[in-house]
Image 1 (tube, rainbow, N blue to C red):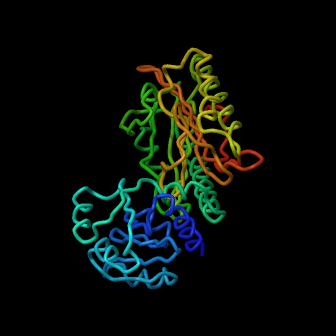
Image 2 (cartoon, rainbow, N blue to C red):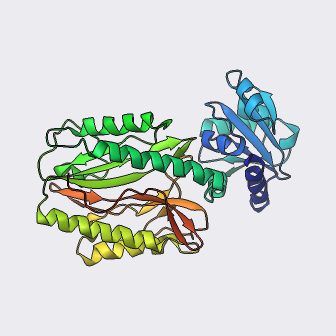
Image 3 (cartoon, one colour):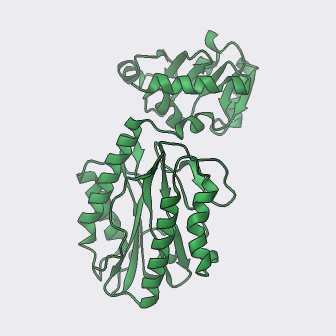
Length: 353
């Protein structure tokens, strides 16, 4: 199992923060380091690579069965139980981006040497192992197949809500644990709203319909957006679609080991800016995916950092014209030393249905 190696990577990062241990309380990070999915658990990781997992009576039997490689403590107050352990006798880092101020001060009473640290485990999570990538690959395959099943059913008179429900039902039938996030279906003028909530609006002939959705498999999240035409679209919509397709292609081809996140964003953004639509592309180009639908790295203007090998992320440019409509095209892919590995394989040619 990969959990010991993940904890070792976290342990190796502790000396730079001048701490002897890290108290991990964020549920997704506890799962990443131990395999336990729980609403009340914490894990103490020490600089020498040791770990102690605490959870309550609802999850302790699961922990004993699935996390046999770490010592376990049964407690309702998981943070307090671990902060008082001998392994945490030195300076302990806490996840400042997760722990409440009240919880922090409560722990200070029991352990006065706490060091707030943000994003330490999240930084380790950026580079995925091949097992994680395989889970993402399966999630993306389900997403692709769900699209192929549903797209043939879209027709004038069908509502956005119906399409969203069909997508989510298809993903469940194909083996997804659940949708990776609330599906977005935006038709006609609603396509100008990047995170439109599916409504009862009926699709009309000539509409573009944007579908942003994904499956979750073994905790890992797929993310794909496709925009299709229902009947013959107006020429200006075809032109808008082609612009976004070219921008998405430029961004996708820019992904490789060692490139900066800013440069990937700029490759796609330049295509849209040169067409005079800079003000109509207001969000970043993409984001990392994994145990969360949005995780490091983030691609966008002003973002810093470089992309390493085995980093999964999305490339999702869009152009949104208020009151008129919009287009977004998105893939999930993995950065590799020799270029991107595409995980969502559905065509990006404009489908007219």
